[in-house]
Image (tube, rainbow over all chains, first blue to last red; front, side, top):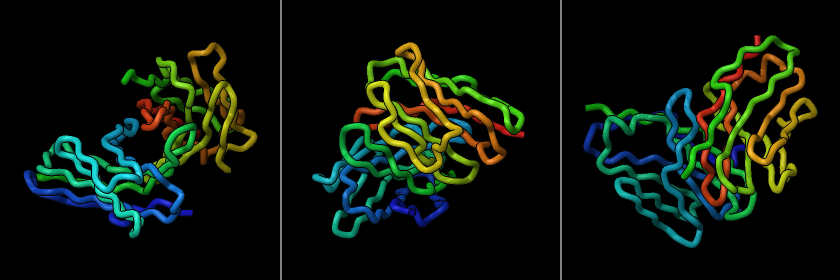
Length: 113
Length: 110
């Protein structure tokens, strides 16, 4: 039951350029979306989130865009840095309460000089 | 945001043995979770714990699994009789809106 999909297992970007990571979801009841960054043998680290009442949220180099009609969100990293190299997970939830996160399969981002 | 600390960082156990994974949320959050990630796969929800009770569990969380918050601070996941397929990274998390994860416990069942 893949409610959250990240169809690109990997992405390679040159340092200084934009990285765009994509995520699709199928459950229209989701109203809160998050991006996490993960290094090997570490826990996911929260990056940025967006609720369904917005279509854009920005935090420094990271911007998340939400297209509810297409059930699609994306994470833009500008400019990309070598330290951004990691696996990025998209997650979806229902806002508030104890609702669990449903994760995508992840996209491995490699930023090279 | 205060850290979530998990112990041990790595545990190797023989198939059929019991293991207890520990988490110290260090906060007054009400909602706590366990997730796991089998090598190369997605992070999967196991169980949510609210107000000292299980609020939701996945189909993975069968009778071999249990959770407790024995002293109001530590949060434990017990696997009664481990199987080879239980080998994974196990993450504890606390949540208001965003979930904050611990660094994980790597469980290896041999």
